[in-house]
Length: 279
Image (tube, rainbow, N blue to C red; front, side):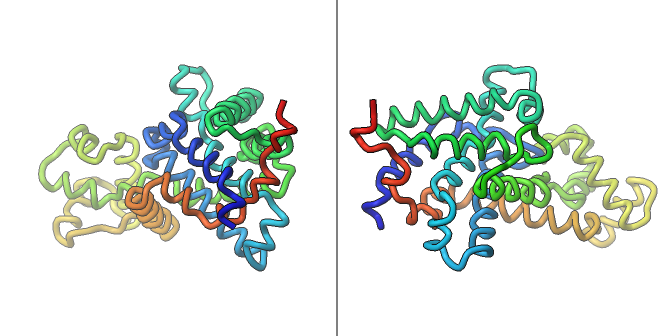
């Protein structure tokens, strides 16, 4: 299978080394790197593929693994480009108000990677990728997913945002510094998070213990060494997000994509134009 996907691997390698993609590691969304979220969308998509199809070989005949992988890599790329270009709209606003910007950016990036890799994508593959990206917000965007691939990525993105896009800072992290006498601004610096996150985590912990004041919560922490951090759903989200961040940091965003199991089922002849088709 290796000989059949050399072009695909090179194209994806070039894409992962494209500056706006690399910059996703510098973009933070609610305490989670956009690159970490991007890998999470890939992982969730793979799990959904395994749930729906008997095996990867059969699935690869039904859906385009290349379009899914590339679409996922660049589905949030505007989060870095919008900041760099100092646009007035956020990524989410652009998905609702001006998805044409998102689509145009997809084609621009793909053309740049085509030049760098030396391989031209077929028009249908390009269209599939563009649709995946411009529709990945589903009902929260202007364009709705109309293909199997786009719907898969939309569902995976929604699941990742629901369960794994939360700053994993917990009340116990905050109280540890409070017990040492640090104030709010100092704790913000130590934990690299906003005052809003700190206040939210304290509020959740107080609610679990039915306490009214921060000093009461701090007394419980000093006595027991820890406090409940929130309800079961919050605990699940927080712990899973913390594990996800550690996993991606340890294994590397680039490596995780290049080693993902979908790569081995990509067939170049179905993805790229033949030399006599290139004008």
